[in-house]
Amino acid sequence: MYRLVEEEIDRKTLFRGKILNLRLDHVRLEDGSIHTREIVEHPGAVAILPVSTDGNVCMVRQYRRPIDRPLLEIPAGKLDPGEEPLECALRELKEETGIVGPRIVELGHIFTSPGFCDEKIFLFLALGGKKHSNRLDSDEFLNLEILSWEELVLRCVSGEIEDAKTVAIVTRARSKVEATFSDKSQGV
Image (cartoon, rainbow, N blue to C red; front, side, top):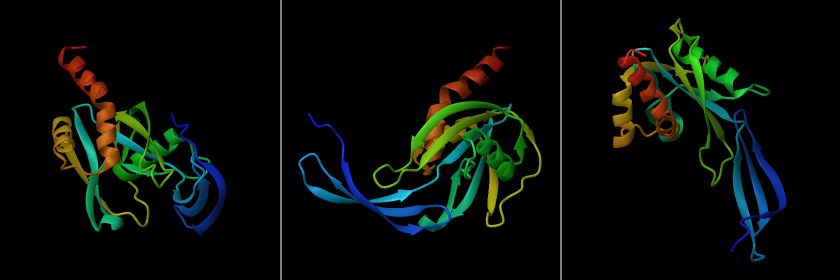
């Protein structure tokens, strides 16, 4: 049975950027061989699934340069230094959708691509809330799209929704959202 550890020999930062760093690690594997690991360091992020009282979900469609096209996804954003995930989630929700005052349910976290990146995304479900005007960042352009919960689930299952954090949060939130709306249909 393997111990499943890699001993760090050294690390070198190759690039420091605004939203990520790139480093090169040299590690010793369990068989004694030495290998390199290219690692993207990310400060972490949040993703928030806003579901209205009538069961609709507010999504954002925005251009994503790495894949060179727009993508439909849930509101999300990078953690600022020292910022708590819940604080960031509420800020991003207001900035991108204008929704304020929802009931928040924490849904844990995911690692987006642990083969080369340490990015950790904290997931939140936002139920209800009120719509105000949104305030996008100066370099942010997006369109809001409203989907029914059922349509969002179908698009995730069919592969039409390709954004991993959106698929993950729908999976994590599904029982909570469906329980919320089945309770309402039963007069609870």
